[in-house]
Image 1: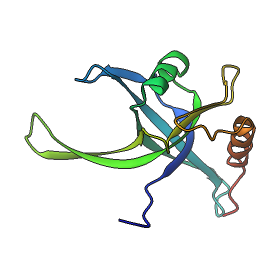
Image 2: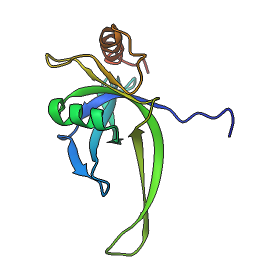
Image 3: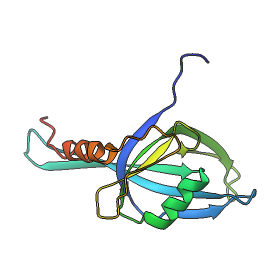
Length: 151
């Protein structure tokens, strides 16, 4: 369909070490569990509130899988750009159809950038458009996200 877009942008922290698996074709795939959080102060009680969403990230690009395996660990902060994809599978125990929604990192319009920390070496991308100051830009975005929401 002309004029449509499937693009997801997330900044969050890994909730577990990456899981690396071999596919039937012999290539590797990385699966990540990414947490994004919002925090705010409740306007009525003054109490600090937080909501966390969990996202499944699947990396198919062989070069990125190697970087993920080598450098990313639980707690690492990353920025990802990918596509939303829902796949259907059958539960072996119940025989019922199940669905999983994932962010796919594959192809030219996807990227993964390591943020913060001493081992952050900037952007790892499937396209060549990463600017040299991407890490600085993303650090600023993540700092802005820590501000209190006024409601």
